[in-house]
Image (cartoon, rainbow, N blue to C red; front, side):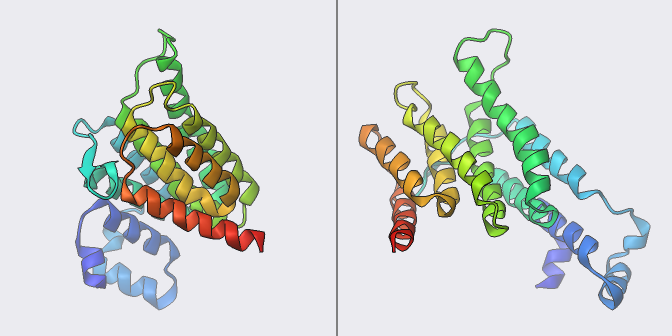
Length: 232
């Protein structure tokens, strides 16, 4: 298994190697240095790698929605690899850094630009829907870091914003793939505010005329079970 992790060249494997390189100590570090010839190449700053992965997601010319029987309009495999690699790196950098440097400075501005362009701000350049969907899914993944570290209030604020977004999705003709990404992000953030998240998704579900993917139904059930625990 370890040989696979260190020999493959995908973005997730590179992220794993970088985290291991930053966390390893003592004899383990010495063995890895010898095995992987780390002395020959300087270690990349983790924050720089996160930024490069975000840029790769936003500039990839082949990004498009992939139809999935379970998830509906989903992201491509290569996009998911970038998201999971960013998630891994941000887990190492912890929530405060992730919130301040990635969610606040990189991801929310993407959403803001997309919304402003749709509302007719001619000076704001367009943002592809697939980029917005990817951004929402990444916000959902990164929010789980905050939940694991106990930053429930900050994560609740994020889920509330996304909840308000999907409540107006139908009337504002938000593309279906973006709507689904927002709902899946809410499911990821659900443990921090299950009652409000379930209410937001159910309200969205009652007005949509599209077929609801089975993954949405499963996600609602999982978050709803947390409501039962919370009430008791």
